[in-house]
Image (cartoon, rainbow, N blue to C red; front, side, top):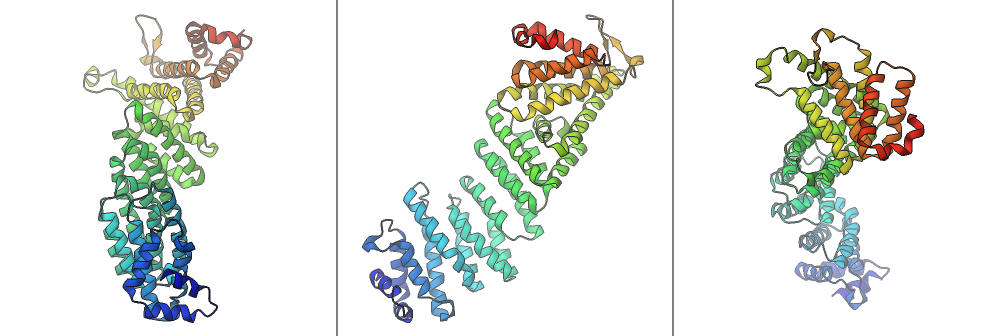
Amino acid sequence: MEVQLFKLSKQSDKKLLVDFLNETPSDKIVDTIKAKLNDLHATNDIDTVLLLRSILVGSPVEGGQESLKRRHLLLECIIEWLSIDNTDDIERSKQASSIVNLVLPEIESLPSELLYAAGLKIIEVIKQSKQVHLRLLDIFTKIWNALSAANEITELNDLFDGLINANWNIQSVVGICSAINEMELSDKQLEQCIKYMTKKLYDVDMDGVPPFIYQLLLISRKGHKKKILGGILEYFSQVANGNDDISAEGTTMLHISFAIKQDQDLGNELVKIMKNSKMNQLDIFSIATLLSVARIHRLQDTVLDLLKSSIISAFKDNEKYLQYNWITKYSISDSSKLSSTLLEIADKSASGWDQVIQSLTQLSFVLIDTVSSQGSFFASNSIRSRTSGEVSNANSNVANLAIAILARLFKYHDIVRSEILEQITSRIVTRSSSASDFIKLLEIIIREHPHTVEKYLNMVC
């Protein structure tokens, strides 16, 4: 049959092809289509795509119910063929791509009831919780948008309920997210999708988290930015806590930074979330994400000011708590948690979090300069250390934290050593109010890294 079909498709009079298909039983056409879909080597010198095109040409849209039925049968055969998981077969994947590219422009020609039936068939595949071919999702997206354009609300709701209630295969999550991003959704549907996807994050292997989050960030352009960012931050605060997660966390930070470069509102939403959530201000991933975002020029001052204010405020609050010993017995101060978090970020910057280095360095400079310029505001509450004799108050503790961070960054990263030494020299030469703190930093650097400092002697002598 395929040889005859191919010959007729070459005739100038297409009516012969239409008549031939009209006279051929549907089951025979289906058998031919199925056999040809599995033909990866152009048997009888007839390419699969050419044969399928012949059926489309012989089934014109204006040809009545018979033609539309054949188009629908062709689409269902392709859906069934794509439902078989052979994604590792390169030849089959190439053929699948060519076939889907052929039928995508033809989908809109089908009436709504046939589109709905085809959409349900794809939903049934997704419900089986097996890996779904990505090109099958392309077909579903096209069907959805065609029904949306026709304003078929009932059919869309049925398809959506099937999609959102299905247990997505973990290997297909990213592909389904990408498909959802291409679908025309109502605000309520979008919100439901985001809620489902942020929950699904917890089922995905850590290696699959960054590409999944990348798709979520793309979807954030449609709306509900707060829910998406909040879900991402909450996920990492609960799940990511081991060395194996550092790479995934770092990649996710880069995805968030890139998304915020493209979408100013997304950056503003992140800052709002951090301002309004004390827990996020103490969370290592959240703070590291802010530091990564601070590399974006328009957000640099906003982010550094937010972090500076949070840190100084935590140390001031801690100083007040120290006046009431009974409180310290039952609660670890936020300043202690913040100190541990920032020092851990400095350590992780040596394990792949390169994107935080520059911002963390700048934040440390800002902290030292800010608290030193405040003078003796807390002098009345100052406590002198029994061992060193140094004054201990909120400002001095903030400065000591910043010094410790800079010392670690100097140890780990050649890229900031020159800048750190330049800032030390500048403060000392200009007799800045922060000079004593920078001298302390210089002392630590020379004592702990004498050989490293040798190449920079011309800067400090």
